[in-house]
Amino acid sequence: MFGERLQKVRKQLQLSQEDISTQIGISYRAYSSYEREDRKPPIDFLEKLAIQYNINLNYLIAGIGKEFIAPQFDTVKTELRSEVLQILKEQGLI
Image 1 (spheres, rainbow, N blue to C red):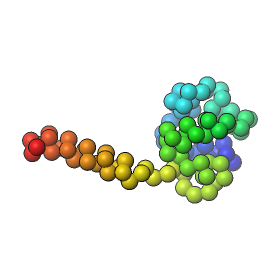
Image 2: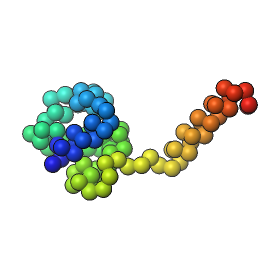
Image 3: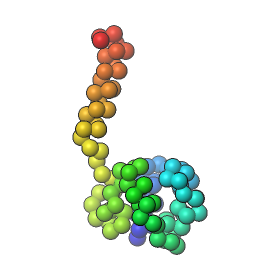
Image 4: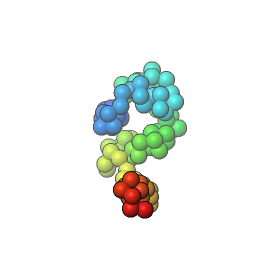
């Protein structure tokens, strides 16, 4: 079940196994073995997944909850503010 959930979130992110393995810093073979459930992933791999892609580890490990954790409101607010300022500058309003 873990492997199926891992594959599901990877596909939702529209990434290949190679993409994730490269971005996380592990070998392609190691990553694919986690999806096939030939090997159990180490905690540092799970930690990197959660941080890099906002994956909910409760979902990934136990199937509880939603696949992804919503970004923190402050982060969204800051990004939105930056986008608004950029648009205002482009329009010559500031």
